[in-house]
Image (cartoon, rainbow, N blue to C red; front, side, top):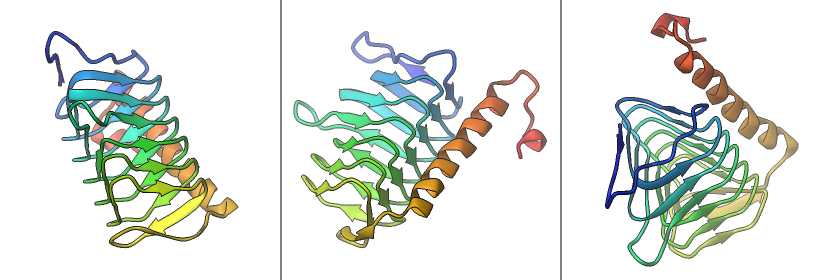
Length: 177
């Protein structure tokens, strides 16, 4: 559901998909071919949220900022996993945020990085590009490999395929690969 806040309606291109159960509120701009899945919440009520082209926000994820301080910027071809919380931070391009991860205010995640499932990235943490981060608190465990980058792209491409199916006029649950 797209909802205005303070007379600002989210901007969603025709090539994007927002599931009817999702809540996209206020100052939110989605890029071309972005997708927002079941029960996700993108709450642009206290600060702006920008989601780049070909990025996906999976089921039950939450994107929110902090009033007057931290907006949310998600780069292109990012995957935000199920139940992840992305709060007042920046994700550069081709970042994978794992299931149940938390990225807090002022954090900056470098391009082609993976935040492992369940990791917590503390406030104002800067993660260099091409890093694999895991743990609570999240720490860089190693550099990303070419295989890891291929995995990031595979997840992103899977959601681009799902988007096509859901946007098609004849989509049914049984037609999803």
